[in-house]
Amino acid sequence: MVTSYLRKNHGAICIEYCTDKNVLCNRVCSKERSSNVQFLDLNSGHNMLSSAAKSIASSKTPITPGVIDKTLQGTYPMSPVSLTLIFGSPSLIGLLPWQSSCTEIL
Image 1 (spheres, helix red, strand yellow):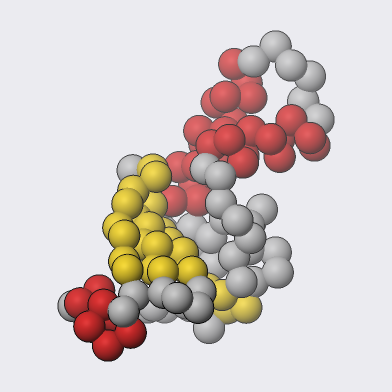
Image 2 (image 1 turned 45 degrees about the vertical axis):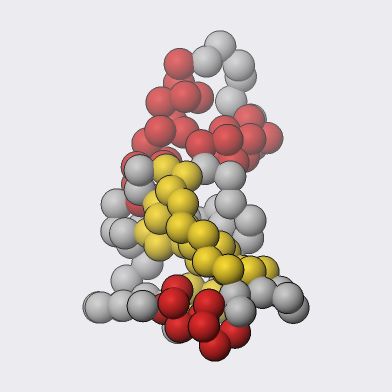
């Protein structure tokens, strides 16, 4: 519904894709700008942190902040989030802490 509205009224192109089983993404492109919209649920952050922790634990590399950051970005590469909309009861459960440090939360 939103996709057809944007296409009809604004000439925008909407592409839906899934980069991870926990995250549904939409890329919206128009002549002026491009935006990525990512939909995460309450379990997304937990699952991604678990995956990164398993990867670090199974490697022989010494654990450093750089290794942790690289592993987290490798688990789910995502640009910094500038806006987060929370539906339902107010909670930060499921937000990705390494991506939401400078996020405005509504």
